Image (cartoon, rainbow, N blue to C red; front, top):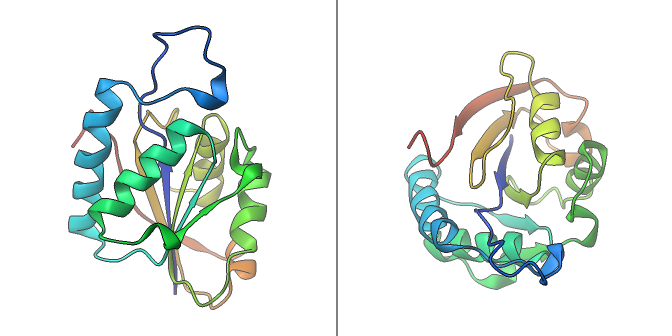
Length: 164
C-alpha cells in the first residue's frame, strides 16, 4: 500500500515586495499554522517515510517544520526543483520516481498545481482551492509508485488551518 499526503506550503510574507517569489519566507500566520497542522497530521499518521518538497523558501520551511514534528531527520527530505510552481502532471512525474521502499510520502508544493493534482486523484472529492498549509491525503493498494497514478486511489482526509 502507498499513502500520499499533499501539503500546500504555509502562508508566506508579502511584507517586502522586493523579495522574489522563490525566496518569500513564511509570515507569522504561516509559522503558527505549520506546526499546528503538522501536529494534527501526526495524530492521524504516525510516520512519514519520505518528505518531497519544492525548494522555494516557503515550501522548504513548511516541510522542515513537519519533519520536526514527526521527529524525522532532514535526511528524509528531498528538494525537487521541478516541484517549484509545478503543474499537476509534473507533480505526478515526481511521485512516479519515488523509490518503492517508501510507503508513506508527504509532498509540499504550490497552487494551482497541488490543487489540480489533488483533484485528479479521486473522483469522490473536489476541492476548489487548497488553502495555505492544507493537507490532502489518499491511499492506494499498489506496490510501486509508478503504478500509483493509473491505479484506483481512496480519499483519506482533507483539512486546513481554518477547519482544524
